[in-house]
Length: 135
Image 1 (tube, rainbow, N blue to C red):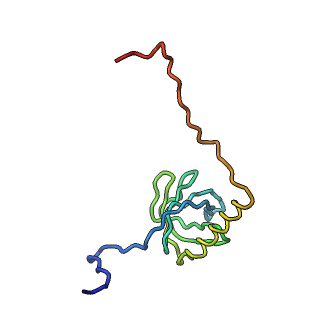
Image 2: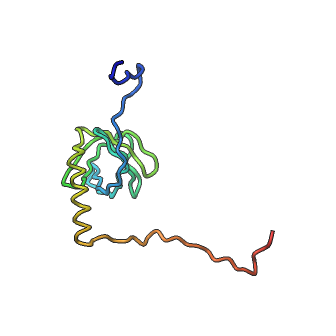
Image 3: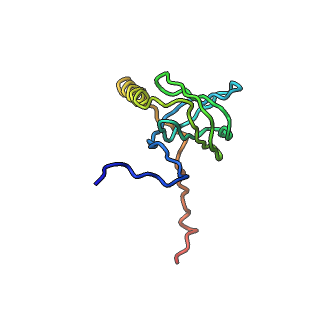
């Protein structure tokens, strides 16, 4: 038996392995606007993210500042609402990004800088017992 990987059918696009992540980053548009984003997955040559405001449009060239002083540039390949996918100009240093994330988590754990966000509160309406009808 052969241990070689199967060859994809002609015309099928082979994609890099995507690694799910939750990473806060900064998106920089060519016009100088800066926007907070959350990266949802990364691969060697791309990433998927969600923006707080409208996502950049297909074909737009943008740069992203990642943790660990790493900056990547590329072109937006798809968008929808607040989400978008980006093809990078150069391979992403996945190991360096992983180390930066570990370092950031360690610093936050040691210094106690964890913050609890209170923006997303669950509201449970209370029913008036006199208005409940038995079925």
